[in-house]
Length: 141
Image (tube, rainbow, N blue to C red; front, side, top):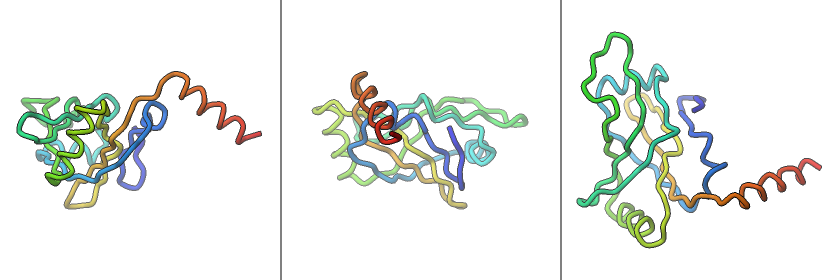
């Protein structure tokens, strides 16, 4: 997790996944979650995004730790994302049929709003990771 210019990045994405397409979404948060994100008490590494039966899209395991003086009932709750129906059906078809995964890339903080960027990805194999390392090494040479 890296914070830069009000953007909280997931820096492990490029190492583990190849990105096919990205989407910008809205996110529904509670008051204590907003305060914690503004204080940078968030971990976006180990989360995953899924689509339920009603064709709604949610983030699970987004670790937002509350501040010291906050009392919270659910620490790791599922958080709803806001997307258009066409985009949700596109994601649903790619996840179910083609075996892609949906991953959170970053959270953007514009003062009254919080936006997220999600990506439709496929996991890299070990030999893909090795090829990327070779390519970077050759570029340096």
